[in-house]
Every structure is written in structure tokens, then in C-alpha cells.
Image 1 (cartoon, rainbow, N blue to C red):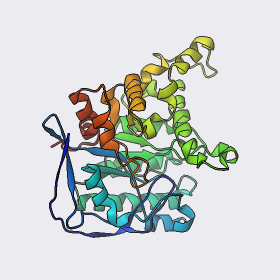
Image 2 (cartoon, one colour):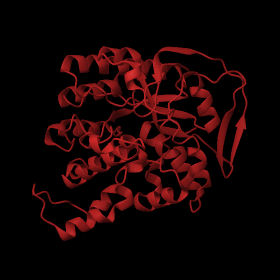
Image 3 (tube, one colour):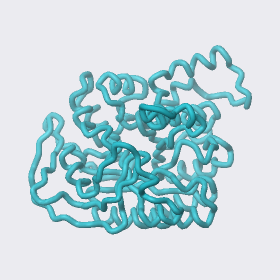
Length: 361
């Protein structure tokens, strides 16, 4: 069960950080503490307090966005309200203790100098913000993956100098799959550093024409499909064999792949010869248990199936905050039948704490 306390807390503003959901940017600045009178929900499982950690929460840095000539109006997505002043209050109400902030890549098409400056600004501002509120926020570094050598430097600097907890990347890089050999140096350094790489999709641009019409299909279908393709390439191209120590977490429950995973095994049975000559060390479905996934899958049955495919110890909270996909993410885990107390605690925060270097208490 979950309990709440109601401490009064001071409010404070950030002048640069603006919070946004997938494909949406919000113009309102964030209040980094709960407003006076706000409630701080504390989550308890069988008498034991759990520090809940959300690995999938978005923001952007206004200065970096403007550096590429982008405007807030151009970046707004449907259904996004003005959420800045409510950020911490919403976390408190939802029972989220810590958010790991990430910025969806919008700079993969930029030239080297411009991309370098965008990333520098973002990583420094994220680090400053998290340092000001260390009990509530950590962040993933941005990296300019279109220049892998630069991305390696940015990852190392972000982790070692700025205290960032890994990197957030798209599901492809300007149309290139990051299973391509030129990205191997980045994966190698991420493996050496032992940090988490958070994969967030950017729709599936090649299908833009088919996504037109009702249903917000570029996000509803395009985002999970983008992740499905990315993870499939990492598996079938042998990237995960080459870098077995990689720590990868995918948004939206890994897209469609875990839901239809056995088809990948049977693809090798029906058509065992791969064009590249890659010979996998194990079945495709076995690689799923080497990665991590957020729990943004909406129903108890979907969560049960995801856990059955990848293991509950591989699941972490993902809310997509502040987009209103999943405000009940904590209860999604608490109320789903069939999980032990230890498994619920792992999903709620213990696994994420280990991956992100957060004190679980």
C-alpha cells in the first residue's frame, strides 16, 4: 500500500529548464519543489518504504532549442498543457520520488560545431539543475551520435565531470541504425563506463506518409515501432554479442518486440542464413533478458506479459512525464496481480537505483 505525508515545501524557479513530453515542448518554467500545502505520497510495499524512480521523464533547454532555430510553437504536440509549475507537485501526487530527465534528440541533423554546442549547453544545464535538487532529479547526458567520436567525448565528460547517469539516445541516427559499425566506439565506451543508455524513439520517419490522419499515429504506432526496429537490429546485427556488458533501457516497454518476441526466434529457424554472415550466440528472445524496459504498457495484463518475457527484475518505472500517458504508473505496479513484494520493489525503484547510482534509501 502507499501512504502520504503533507510537508510544506518552498518553491523555486529554474530559468532555463522547461519540461515537455514526447514530441512536445512546454513554455512554462518548472517549479523544482512542491508548492506549499502539496502532498508527498510515500510508497510502501508490505511495510517497507520504496524510493520510486521514474527513468522516462522529459525536458528541454530553451537556449539549446533556439540555437537550432526551433520555436516552441513548432515543437508543440497535441494534448500537452502548461505543466511547468506543477512538475514537482505532480511527482509528489503520483508517488514519484526521483525522475531521470532526458531530452529527445533534435540535433542529429546539425553540423558538428552546432551539435557540440547544443549538447554542451544541455548537459551543463541539466547538471546544474540536478545538483540544485539532488533528491528529486538525475539526468541522462545528450550526445551527438551523428559524430560517434564526439559522442564518446560527450558521454565521458557528462558522466565523469558533470555527474550525469548515462545517455539518452534516439532509436536511430538521422536514418542510420546504431548497430552500424561506425557507432561501435560509442557502445564500447558506454560498456566500459558501465552506464545506462536510455533509448527513446522518434517515430518512424520513413512511414510519415502512412501516419497521416487521425489517431496521432506517428506517436501511437510510430514510436513503439521505431524502438522495435532499433532493438531488432542490435540483436540481429550482433551488436549485443560484441558488447555484452551494455546496459540498455528502452522506453514504452521496448515497443512491440517483447509482445511478439518468439517470431524473432522462428525467423532464424525458417531463414537461418543472414546476409551479413552474423552468427548469434543465442536465440533472439534471450537477448531481451539482457536489457531493461520501462513499464509504460498501460494494463496489468500487458505488464504481466512483459515481465514474463524479460523478467520483472528488468523493469523500471516510466511515466513519460509530463505528457499524460501514465499518471498511475506506481499503482500500475502495486495493483497488478501475480507479483511478489520483492518484484514490486524492484520495479518501483530498486533496479533503477542500481542502474543510475541512486541511494535506494
